[in-house]
Image (tube, rainbow, N blue to C red):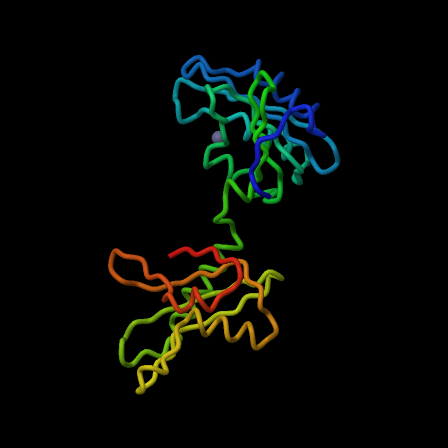
Length: 237
Ligand SMILES: [Zn+2]
């Protein structure tokens, strides 16, 4: 889901947002004075609300989003459709902190996230996936690219590269660089993965991860690869 700003009046989950606004009033934030409310919509329609609860030992504070999630989990609800987060910070929207993103993702990586201003003027509609793109499936892809790198045949350059290509249907193809005494016939890891995919009938790609070690710098695919590829690539170097 692409993030977009929408009018409150167009939302089907207005009640959820209003409950987040109400929950914000309960915020215990004597240190930051920054009130946050959250309303979590479970798949079965149940709603759990939360506010931030601070502590004089700052590290013991808990965010509104996690308050709502722990209330839900401890009531037997682990599948969520959406969460509304309400806070006021000038012209900007307030988004969940990294810990809360991870926390929600643990249970529902597909959940829609609504970032709301208390006056209900504008709402930023986004998703856990947008807020936390490096999710577990990507981590799995990264591990595969690192593993396949060990298979690289590179007696000339000694430079191992691995690639893991995720197709639109979820299938993953891996590849490593394969060198040849005739240097011009060398094939890159990315190309290896792509030719394996194409020759298996998969031509639409979502993600490619390239793994290589070159000191402090990242290794990016050759320009040729970019010209060869027609799909949508998201690359972590
Ligand atoms: Zn948080």
